[in-house]
Length: 141
Image (tube, rainbow, N blue to C red):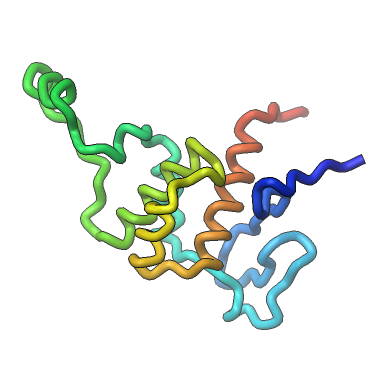
């Protein structure tokens, strides 16, 4: 018997790897026209992948302790991206990797202001949710 958690939208949806040739949005759901399927380009998917390793503290401005550590041991490379669009995507992806669908509304609003559509954001959150659930599974041989 299967269980579907309706408390989280798209919790059971598996997002397909979004290549330009794939029109599959989720298993069993195909777009009528491949141009209608929400996609992110390769650079945006790279940002999402790199954000998987970032901490939630990378979203905050450096505090006193961080400045003291940087003074003593040298500065760390900043994870902040130069492009405002990619930085909004990185911030949302970092939150999604750590919190799942419980991202802050301000991160969603910033991503929408950066030019991402609701369909793209749903695809992003569903893909990260799939990656989060797969992280805890062991590979059987």
